[in-house]
Image 1: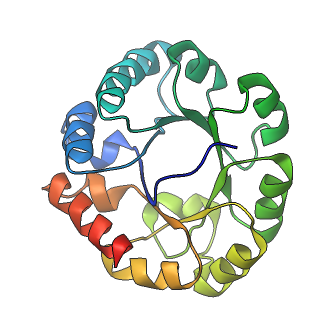
Image 2: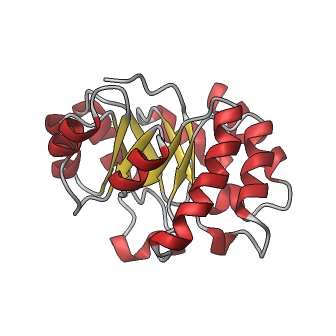
Length: 208
């Protein structure tokens, strides 16, 4: 399985960008040391998502930053992206691995101990687990799961666990102490006036 060399994952949501260009923000973020990007614009049609993915790919590739696309194995293959991120109710990692081979990353969204167990069993490279804290973007996935459950799944998982949901720099220490490999964030980066400074703050918190 490919190594998961990042502890900070930016999950995109252009509605959080305050009207600013998503590719422009990603360029600033990777310049500041952002190590990985997950393109997650689920409302876009293929004809809209393709040029956006292509533009972002040109940015991330020049910095050797992995670009992982949400759920679209076809788009990942067409643009030679670095991986795919599967929803908890999507295809399992097993047939996807057979399709894409051993060199690309497979991440899986998880919301329970059983989800994490299944992702481990099916051959995912990492899981994103949450929501850990209260956050508007994750309300459809239910109540916050909390640090206690995060610690439980981290003990049970043989692959890296990235915590998501209400993650701030101040909470990084708590989720790392619970056993999380790192964090996945949306608004904590995209809604900041200075995304470069936000990336640096998160990196410092994760390295502390």
